[in-house]
Length: 64
Image (cartoon, rainbow, N blue to C red; front, side, top):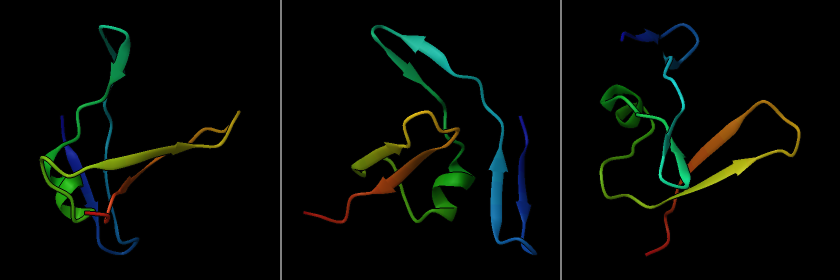
């Protein structure tokens, strides 16, 4: 599973499948994506989606 880095668009992209784990769903995040977002293992994050939209955003929590 490759990770594409496009410096012209300032984007890092990877395609992953959504899987079920217990009562939740999971998507693996490649290290290159986390690094590009300034995130790492153990960081807390907020997930956000527009109702009926096609995008899920993950924001690193900066609160201590």
